[in-house]
Image (tube, rainbow, N blue to C red; front, side, top):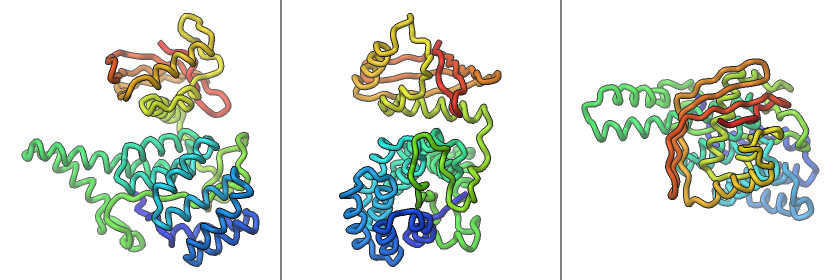
Length: 324
């Protein structure tokens, strides 16, 4: 389980990809950051961005520098805007999760990692970080269970197991320099010239390989969980992106009207809580059927139903074709 810290030493060790691929002004900013001159690096990257405000590499580097300066709210803003402008890139989602985790905001960290995995299912760093987040959430839940029932031996055993995973004795000598708590690995570079039509970017050290791809069932599950996360997060654009162009709208409503109705359903409530359980997946060729129990709650409505989604595999992604 990775305990790599979001630290200057780790960031600078992997910045060569940015330095080699980036224009000279970004190389200057990278070099300044490598020397620990983060204020100077920020001035240089801001000067570059004044003439190239949409450049993804420059904005990504700025987010890293702001993080090194301890200006996390500003770094979060930079990475958030990158996810909005380049939703196909998993690295900004991953780094958002690292920043959220540093603030103990594990729910937002989980959502960001789920989005990273949705955009790039073979992104190993995000999968490992998500495992750390789940472990932290589980630790909190077991601790709460023990507070309510001090004789709960099962909760004590599970909590001890999680603590053991993050204890100094369970790590390699290299890892023992990191704090004994789950911390996530930050991504330190973007692929050169991000292209919305390009294949998912590789990670540093991959030698061009994107690694193992999730099994179809796991990919379908990841899609459904990311869809529910976008819904509960009231993220209209991401939510609608899960629906196939041939989605069968209820009562054959035209697509524009249906999207307007769904937008209203997502944005009107003050809050939305969505929980899906008892998930069953069956796959036949490029079609998948997912059945699950759906508990929905908002400030205006509650429901507890069973739902079926029919998904189709197109262009490397699973899309919702029908809801029942």
